[in-house]
Length: 156
Image 1 (cartoon, rainbow, N blue to C red):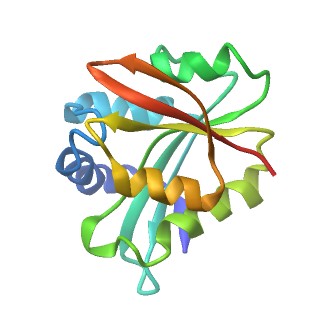
Image 2: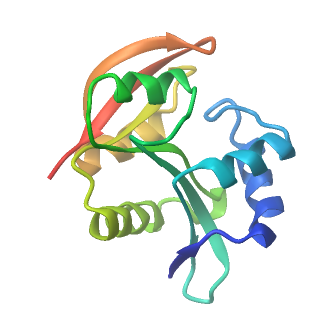
């Protein structure tokens, strides 16, 4: 089951966010809350017993967002959907939830270009492997926020 994010989810998913640093950027709770409000779409992935197991924050091309990675895609594509962060809680990884979430996004929003970045330094090998298996292709790399990232796109 996938549903829209609720404010009651924020404390739990902020903990997940912080537990995955440096694979994602650290955010204070207030920064995280604001990001959840300002993104175009935010969803919670739930298990069969309706317990949250993951989340995703998405931005489209119309969003006023100053992330250098988002701006990379905005400068190249007129219409796209950008994954700012996706986290599946550790104990729920490798159970197909990430693929279910991406399938839902593609089926629901049908983006022309679906894009994200994944850390190369420090390495996030699990995420890179997942994205390549899903069909994302690297279109570039950049050094931002003291990291090197692989910039990835997916299109049907």
